[in-house]
Image (cartoon, rainbow, N blue to C red):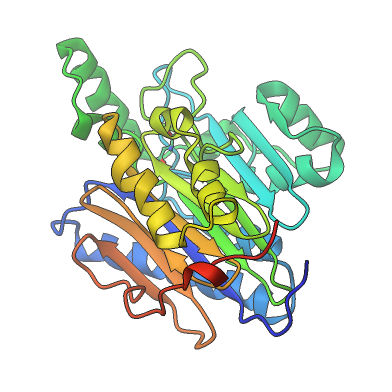
Length: 333
Ligand code: ASP
C-alpha cells in the first residue's frame, strides 16, 4: 500500500563491535567521511523520487568500495587466505529478495544480490554459480586481489596465531567480523527496503556463510519494517533476528524501538552473541540498538544532514526523534 507525502529516511551501519577511541584521527575521519558520503549518495536517490531499494543499493556500494569496511574491498580473509563475500537486499513492498554468498570476484556484491532478485528466478546464489550468473548478465568480474588490504591480512595472521593458542573469546570473535555494512530506507512512496554486505568473519572456514545474506536473519524488510543486522552472525541466524524484529512490529504491533531492543539487547546476548542492528518503520521511526562498545551508524532525514556516530556514548541524534505511538507504528503488511 502507498502512503501520501512520506518524508524519506535513510539509515546505514558500518558494523558493531569493540570501537575504541584510540582509533587514529585519520582513520576516524575516513570512516566518518565514508559514512557521510554513503548517506548523501543514498539520500539523493530518495530525494530524486527513486525507490528505497535504489537508496539502499547506492549507499551500500559506497561502503563496499571503501577499504575501511569489511565489505567489498577491505573484506576480511578466510582461513585459507581468500576473500569470500556475502550480501542481500530485500524490497519490503513486494517482499522480493536477492542474495549472494561466498562470491570471490564481485566488486559490489550488493548489486549482484539485487540482480539476483530482479533478473533471476531465484533468491540466493552462491560461489562460482553466482559469478557465472554475474557474467551472464554482463556484470564484470574483478581479480580476487582487488579485495586485499594489508591490514586485513595482518588480522588473519593474528587470528591464525590465536587459533594455535586456542583462545576462543567473545571479544576475539567480535574483532574478527567487525565492519559489515548495511542500509535501510523509506522512500517517498512509503516503501521500505533493507540490504547488508559483508566479508564475514576473519579466519572463517569450510565455506562458512553468515547471517547477512540469509533473508530474515541479517536482512529483512516488509511493508512496515526494515532491518539490517551486524554482529556475530551465528546468533542472528539462530534468532532469525531481522525477521523477528519485523514480525513484532507488523504482526504484534510492538513499537519499533522495543521490538528491536528485545532481539538485540535481550535475545542475542542471552544466548552469548553480540552485535547491533538498524531498524526503520513505515512511519519513518528509527531504532539503532547495539550491545557492543560501539557501532558505526548514521542516518539522514528531511533536513538533509548526515548524522554519523561511531562510539557507544556518542549521541547519534535518534534519541530526540519522536517515539512512535503503538497504534501507528506501521502500515498493514
Ligand atoms: N554478521 C556478519 C557475519 O557473521 C558479520 C558482522 O556483521 O560483523 O558474517
